[in-house]
Image (cartoon, rainbow, N blue to C red; front, side, top):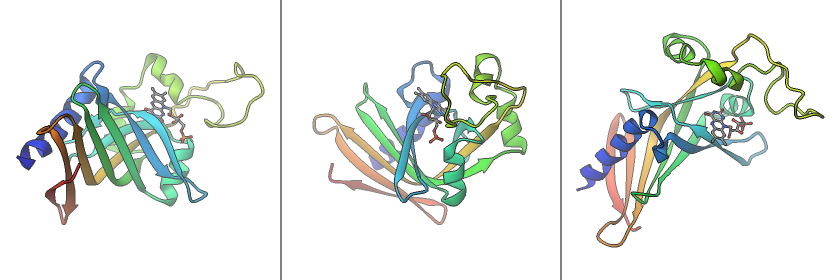
Length: 181
Ligand SMILES: Cc1cc2nc3c(=O)[nH]c(=O)nc-3n(C[C@H](O)[C@H](O)[C@H](O)COP(=O)(O)O)c2cc1C
C-alpha cells in the first residue's frame, strides 16, 4: 500500500505542470536566508524531470539565488484541496545559468513571461514610483533544479484515508515508511 502512496506522489507531480489549474502547479519554496532565518515564496512548478527532479524558473538576480549559492538546501510544499493531499519535499537545488537543460527552458519564455526576467535593475531593488520599472532586452533567466532527498505525504481525510508517509532517498534508493498522521 505504501507503494501506492509513493506512486500517487510522483504521478501528481508529473501531471501538474501540464494540467491547467492543477493545484500542484504552484508551490511554496523555502530557502535559508542570509540572516539565519527561512524565506518562503510562491513559485510556479514547471516540470518533473525523468530523474524525478523538480524544475522552477526565476530571475537570476533574485534574492533566492544569493541564498541558494550560500546554502543549496531548500524545500517545497504543495497542497491539493480536492485530494486533501499535502506533499513536502526537501532537497538540494542546482542553479542552471547555461547548458542544455537551461537552454531547453529559456526558449520557452516568450510574450508576457519575458517581463519576469528583463527588468533593468534586480528584483527587490527599492524604488520610489511603482511605475518606474525600466526593461531591457536581456533575459536574466535561471533554472532551478531541486533534487529531492526527503518526501513527506499527508492525506487528512477520514480514516482509513488519513495517511502520512515518509520517503527518504538513501544511496539512490527510496526508503518508505508510514508515520502517525
Ligand atoms: C502566483 C505566483 C507565482 C509566482 N511564480 C514565481 C516563479 O515561478 N518564480 C519566481 O522566481 N517567482 C515567482 N513568484 C514571485 C515570488 O513569490 C517572489 O516574490 C519572488 O520570486 C522574489 O523572491 P525572492 O526575493 O525571495 O527571490 C510568484 C508569485 C506569485 C504570487
